[in-house]
Length: 95
Figure (cartoon, rainbow, N blue to C red):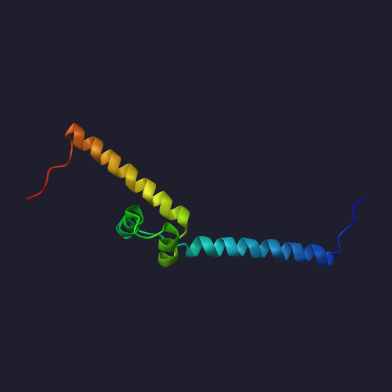
C-alpha cells in the first residue's frame, strides 16, 4: 500500500534536487582546464614512475582518471609521430 507524502516531504525532495543541480553546475563551471603545455610535465613525471600516480594527482589537484587519460593521449601521440617518422613525413626543421 502506497503512502502519500506530506507537502513538507515533497518540498524537501524538490529542494534536494535543486541543490544537486546547483552543485553539478558549479563543478562544471569551476572545472580546471589544462593546456597541453601544463599536461606534459605532469604526464612525464607519472610516466617515469618516480612517484605514484595517486600521489602525483593529489599534489597537482587532479583526478587519477584525468592523469591516465592524458597519459594515454600522450602515448598515442608518440605512436603517431613514430609512424610518421618511419614513413619519412616529418615536418622540416627550421634553421
